[in-house]
Structure formats: structure tokens, C-alpha cells
Amino acid sequence: MNIDFHVHGLLSKRKDFNERFFNEEIEYAKQCELNGIIMCEHFNAINFKEIYKYLEENYEYKDHRYLVKGVSVFPAMEVSIKDKGHVVLVGRREAILEIHEKLEPYMNRENLVEFKELLDLADEYGCLKIGAHPFRRGHRLCNHPEELLKRLDAIDLNAKDIFKKGEEEVIRELYELSSKIGVNVITGSDSHTPLQLGGIYTKLDNPCYTIEELRLAITSEDYSIKIEPSLYFRVYTSKILKRYLIARTDYNKDMEFTI
Image (tube, rainbow, N blue to C red; front, side):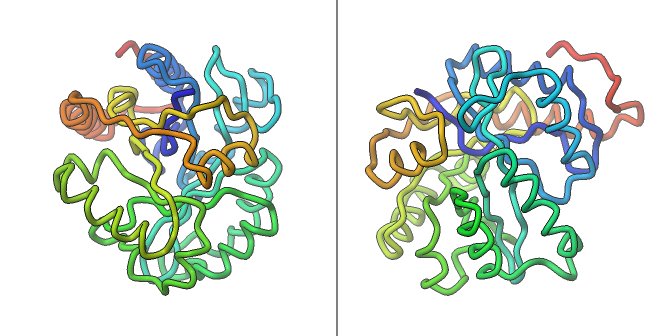
């Protein structure tokens, strides 16, 4: 089972949810032979709930994922925490929506949730906890206390970081942290457009359809990491497309798409 642990369904957290754009992403995922994606929208995205409203109205929810045209879409969200860093929580549909409500007082940059408080909340709901791009400039999750980092279930080898810093450096620093805190490495494209999918993914030895199955696969290291030579081109073209669409004043939920 090929899975991408870091995918966004919105072009930007400040833009509308566009179902045509989302479905282009699903089609690209299928073309890239991805069987599953973690839909980790930013928790403070203006249309966060619209994604789940659309999924609920149009697709079957089975085990712990939506079945979208043959692709397993796992509910998740990317949360910004106090003192820098992002954490991806993956959970049951109800868990993600309830946690999102509990995080409403922490939506502003000046009042973000404490790392420990978020970890406690995630554990309360049985969520998978992934440290997103822990060495990224401006979001250095790696600087948080080691005892908190050890509570993560995985850390994220991220396509955008590889594009910016190079594969060798990103892998070196990430696996040094992995060894230090005893947390395994998985992968994420960090895609905000369809074009970025497929450059990096995790190949699970067995299909996983629940949070517990994903957690077991990660802790047991029943997977391998795949990095395609096309990663740099995919990230570069995706950046151009994203900038172009954000700059357009007519981008909204009704805009037509064929990418």
C-alpha cells in the first residue's frame, strides 16, 4: 500500500475549498499509484470543515478513512504549536472534528496551543501524532524538549525540505533525530496542488485502514521509503502553480479546473 502522510486538500488555508481541485488531486494520486493519503489540512484553514462536509456528503466512510474513487483518505489536521513547529494528528473522523473544535481558542498566532497540551489531547482521542518537517526554518519542532518529541509516533521526511536543502542533508538530520528520540521516519509530499504528489511516499508492507494499523506499521517498521527522481520537478512546478492560482482574484469554490 503506497501512502502519502502529508497532503493538503486546500490550495491555501486562506482560500476556498474547491471540489474540482480536490478531485484533480485524487486523480493525480491514482496516476501516481498512491493507495492512500493523509488529508492533514491546517487546523486554522478558513474552509477546514467544508472539506469534511464534502467528504461526508459524497463518499463512504469505512474503518477510519473515506473511500474516494479507490483512494483511502484519512482524516487529519496539521496544528501549529507554541514556540514553533507543526504536528499532524491523524484520527477517526469524529476525533479530528472534536479536536478541531477544542482548538478554536488557539487559532491565532499569538495564542497557539502548547506542545504538551496538544499531545495530551491527541492521546485522549487515540490519534497518530506526526512531527511535520521538524527542521524547517521558522517551524523547528526539533527545538522542543526531548521528552515531548519522544511522544510522537513518527517524524516527517518532507518533499519541500528535500527540494530546498537537498536529499542528503535532510535525511542525515532527520535520521539523527529519529535515533535520538526513538521515533521512526515516514514521508510526506506536503502537497497543496496535485502536481506535487508522487515524488515521495511510504510503501507499507500491508494495507492499513485504521489508525491502529497505521501506528503498528510505523512502530514495527513494516514499510519502506520511496523517493522518485521527479521529486524536484514536481515540487518546483507545484510551487509555480500555487503562486499563480493564489494571485488570481477569481479563485474560489466554483472555479473550473483541468490540470
